Length: 114
Length: 112
Image (cartoon, rainbow over all chains, first blue to last red; front, top):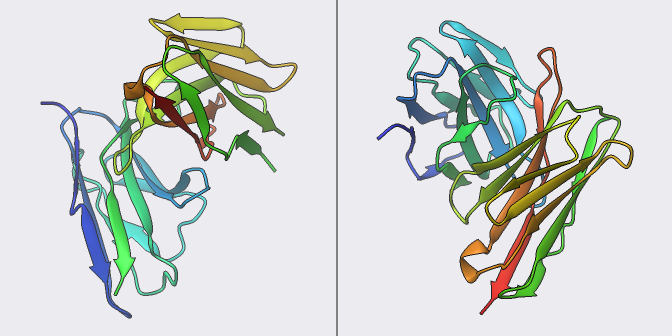
């Protein structure tokens, strides 16, 4: 099946720890995005990538890092510098970045603090 | 700054009625507007796209209107069913490489 796989579904972070969220796609899409979803707020863009080996900061990139070494994969690392990491994290893809094509989303990773 | 507003209060309606959800925006001139459905613990799923020069778009029981003068989109679900219960997000898209802006969504409950 074509789609986007995010793992793990639930993740717990200890103080001072970096954690990495996985996002894998087999839709052959060029563009990939990471969003953060908090209750009562719209999706906020963390990082995006329009093509392999290239990525750009979104609106709330501080405390996060990404890589795009393969077209299929766009992992997000939540570093210890992110002081309020508890949220629902969504990965999305699109055939072409910022076009009118719909975004396809994974089923998210819920990150909590231990 | 750009702002997109959806009714934060949940909408409760009876099965068979028409549900109408509102999306208002300010300080933005979107070329496109999208609607997504999100179930609890899941990612959003695309439903419909409407362009700025289109007044109305339909897909099965769904209808979307787009009024660029009022800066508003209405999303209608006719003959609503309990399976339509979910959160519905609107999203604005510009042209020329502008990012997508998502609303916080409106929760819809359809009672049998």
